Image (cartoon, rainbow, N blue to C red; front, top):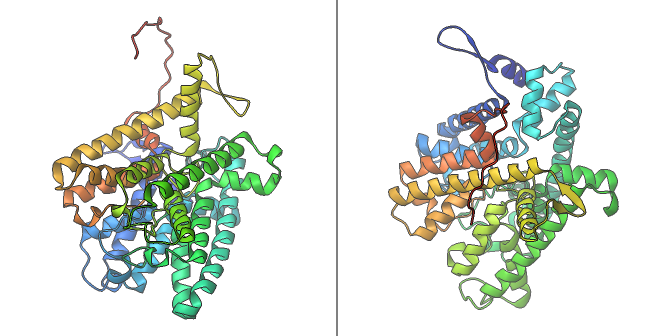
Length: 454
């Protein structure tokens, strides 16, 4: 109720002359994220949130990383922050991962609040839906599915850890890691991440299942639950499931092949442990951010592969970010159609509308421009190798959270750049672009131009 009142109040902001300025849905979503980050920063700055003083920049960086479910950290979560601070981070991850609009819509439904037109537009923008009925259905499904899946993950992790940690500590760590994993955040309570559990099949399978399910997308989960038969699934569901299977399988085989003889990663592990570690490192870049191996010790070829996986990201309307699987597939199929000199772009015996192809191209170009800008600035401000900078920028932009060790060494300017990239990556490049250039349809049709391309 209060969140909807907030939107009613701030969707109309008074200018200096007393006139009302109507904020667009992308602007309101951005404002909501910024206010959530500001609230989280204030809570993390409190003395009871940390064992040692936290600077404002570190508090803002941590809050941004949590709200955008990235996982990049400049201070160790387990040792620097108290239990209160860790709970704040977990809550920021949950709200940021599921989206504050989810809680707003569900709250309005439960209270029977009438949703105004501007609120409908904001909700539709947040959920990428065209009708209010779909928005409400999706919001309820997101919350219910998330809580159910997280409850199962919490119980399984608690049972897995209780013998070594005791019920109390096992319950807390299970709570934190379940939220962090399902929301693809990558925050850990150990400076070494999940490296101590590299050979633990239970921990590995539970954590990977949580972030893979969270990264598939809630529309896909809804479709699977409602239809339950492959031939009845929508084209989008079948496409996401097939692409996820293919990408994960190829990444798993390539990382195992590239790291099998590397003594710093897989070389000294047994065959079964190699398979487990290779699987974890193959699926975590899209966009979970956990690791059971030292990423910095991996071969350059593996790091380049991880860069591609981070850039691709997860599914739409999921807890993951990145370019998104659907966008990547559309770009690949458009390229294939052009090379085969076909007029239409098709996938799974369905034609992809031209507007979706253009949107995919716009997303890719905007993402690459932001990544290039981030690399350019960090290369000018930071004393680090080019590969480390590229990895850090792609990780921040894709809200992955993996790092080659540069995050903690970033200068103040570098941390500000990383904060901007994390926000841009979570909101989406096009949402950010809409803030700068409001969409405008032309009424004039110009003559065709013949341009040389390629």
